[in-house]
Image (cartoon, rainbow, N blue to C red):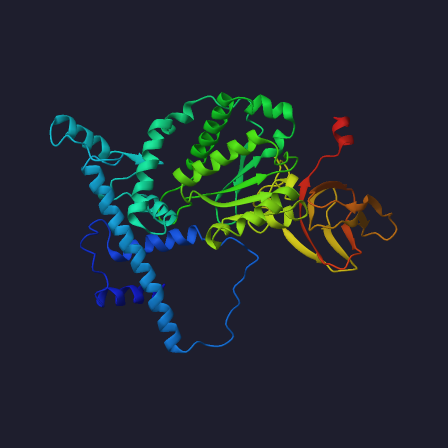
Length: 470
């Protein structure tokens, strides 16, 4: 932070901040902080497979200075675009043309009343009038600027179209509509990712049969209702966001295509295209990342071909995972304790045994080798509960047993699975009647190492026979 502060001060002293007087809302330093915080919360690169190799040598001072100058010029360009965008939005509000062309009426009581109403206009709960100095105004404006590569006029037109669409679509009132019947199994919100973004799941496999698709999408009226429901769910997601410097202001969307019909289902493809375009046009940069999982072969081939026509910046917002890579892909972005058990994580509804704060450990099973997990159980009269999941596309075998400390006691075989299925979380428990340990043995016969995640907990337990005596 010391170097960044020094660079900001140098920029001020060098006279590069020529538009500072225009920005009577925030000074240059605060604007850079808002921009840097926004970029930190919404990185454009989301492919976790790409890693930046650290330099093993020290750059010459001239190289570092050149890179610093380029970075400062980029920040200066973005800041100037934000300053101009603020001024144009303020002018559009005071000139009564925020929703389109300027009004022909100049002056008059009606015009003054309309302007006063525009001064109070909000988007996603954030005031748009820059002079109100709301902490979220810059963040909202930056989303439109980023969507248009900091081209101010295009960003202003996008904002105007969005406000006009929201008024015609009645988006501000959509949360009050009862659109749930028929759609309750298609989308749900479940925890947050590693960076704090709310995670939303879209389960298109719920539309796997023609009868269900016809019931939900069989007519134009039903498809329009489905589209309104998608908008309603996005508006609900926005309520979970914080449009403040340092706050989480975008979501992660997971699209599960397991059991989804092929490309011949025209109704589903049509409504998905419409909703996708609608979110791009009117909810810019609110979806931090799209993760499409259980992708069928036809979709994978289609996406691979069409993605060649897109820029790298757009491609980085979408991650594709074939069925064998679902768990490993999702765990790159979502902690195991927050990932639903059906996707290989540990999160269960109404879980009385574990909480998100319980520690998750990791062990690697080497290729063509055995690996053991030992869970100590030194105290009798308790129940040991444990979760485990194997990350990866190939199956391994495993065995669970209780081994007493007393050599005269017998081992107890708890589980002996010839195959541990991929993407399948397992929970088991055992009442400890004497001190010992739980030993879980994994056998990996293949030539590729596997990662195992696990956690365990001790729960005080009253034996059933004691309760029966009472």
